[in-house]
Length: 424
Image (cartoon, rainbow, N blue to C red; front, side):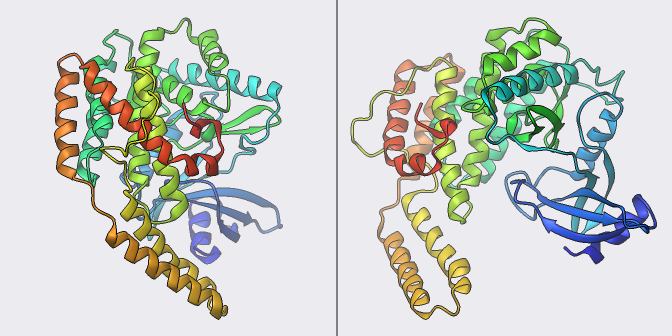
């Protein structure tokens, strides 16, 4: 994308005198392309904008920029720190042009700043959920919060089943648990952020400056948002401070219902991580694999299935994807596609990279493949058991299997070194 591509958009939707002087791909934004645009008017005054363009593929490629635009426009003037949306259109792919808010995703905040951020994040969520999606925002609501939750479970199960190269029995079982235990408490449905948490919160000096990334916003049970925020705060913010900030505005929270939505957050993020783990780029695949295992462990614990038992040294019966042969082959393709062109002038490095890629490809071909049929059979058993009330023995078997897998993922845990990704 170049300034010449963006200037006509700025002139049509913002100011005929504006000109894009620079356009740069941002390092943030995993699901869609995020571009920072610096624009200048006729007297040389500059302003910064953000252009989010739909990614050509990926875990959230199904989301729509015009839906995100409608949500942001509906929230204008409501006192929430959300970016102002200016325009939608097509630039090879659909895009959303919006204001660039000050601040950045939380980094090395002090303990005092983290306390303030957690409290304010809870407060802003409560204020969002105080808005009536029909009377205040003009949305059409046709489902109860219970029906909307079941719809979310069904939607994520559909993506998991449709796009999986193989089943993950524990994930299938937790999806079935979510289906059977969705709260039917009569809480009115509300507009949800959809991906609440510090990872989508911009801050400056301990103050929240923006709530961003509304691409999976939808109407549902308000505690779904709070459960997602609790998931995102692990290792970064005190979840009790977050909940207290929410309760200060919204009143007491049903902790049993919240526990359900923490499970659902882990399950939906496990689906995202599982799909991410198929990406050939090593860092994305590695993070997806590690995060999948940790979400499964925390989801099972929150659901009351118990904590992980000590591993017994045996290999897992149902290994997570990417499997060893897929991971090795993916790294080989990355070496050939990305590393070799980057070392074009380094003959010795090119030879070593080519040899390494060939060795990895040969190794991948020599690794015995896991029996997918066994995993499918186990998933069928655990899903049926959860729909019938749960089988403690099956749950224990799958948790032991996950414990075995986590032992083998220790190098990834050490690499990421983040509390959220540490062993539970």
